[in-house]
Image (cartoon, rainbow, N blue to C red; front, side):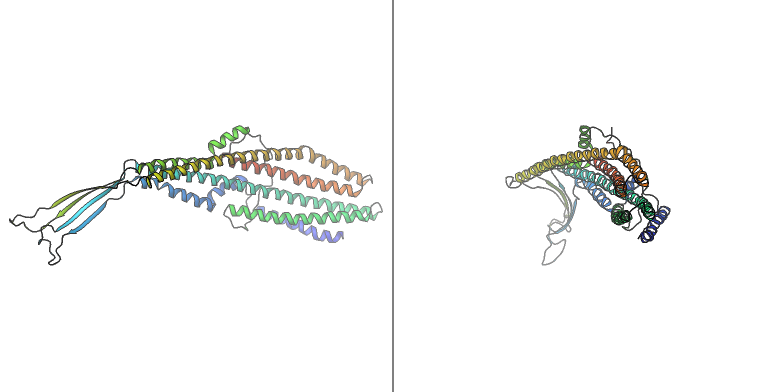
Length: 429
């Protein structure tokens, strides 16, 4: 049984080590800073919403500009019995220009409303950027944790191989039991099964990271083997809430929408007043008058305006509509503020809990578990500790080491969520 396991596990471990070594050579380690930088440059979703913001930014100046003037060319009073330009005195070739003139203030209000919408779209770009950076950081830390878990699994398989050898040696000299050998081989098989699951999860998370970075899903992802494990203290909860309310693009975008809605109310009120149209026409005539004098040309000035007389069913209802839209945007802002406050609270709570766990594992549980394994191994070699307790102590150490890296990963993921919730990187004391 031992030979079979050695023939199975040894090549697997060697192959994994060889693959890892070759990967380091072929691929540059993807640091967290580099990943967050790439996502804001390469992610197609962010590029799409940026293009939308750019398009909206081009609208205000269009709406603030007067409508294009209209050129008119008319042939007037052409006799049908004998088409001619000089037969009838009123026959004319007219040329003219006309210009629509919205009531004063309307164009400025239209441009102002469009400007606020463009500003909201710009804030949405900033919000999506925060979300993408949060997602990249979250997935990056998942991959980092899985790398450490795979590394710990491989190291524990090596140790259990040594336990198997030790148990077999003691069994051969009559100092051990065959069940000890079988127990060690069973634990080794369970580690192999865990390794398969960890590798599958790692492949899935690596594909997610590649997708966020707009890389091929199957592209090799290699992360640094070491990170800064220090977790700095956060600013106070009240200060984080204040920063979030002041800087979060999610709230800023809604504030701009409220301003746009307020401007549209003013614009709807302007519709109580008429728009104007001015024009000038020059009429060319040919031929002579009955007294022999040449027919003179004509000039005309045109003025028109619409008459807002259906105010109860049109303008008043339009103002009511715009007021309702303004109230809706105000309620949306309140809802968003509550959402942001909840996000900040949840991220702070997750960070504090995970930090406490990581600190506890690193400073107390792991040192104690390592000492326990060393003591158990020494005791087993002199027949003072049974093999089952030795294996259990090593299994606990494996679980504690994995739990430490998991807690550290969760703490850093909570930091990423907190940065996205607050809207800025400066979240520490």
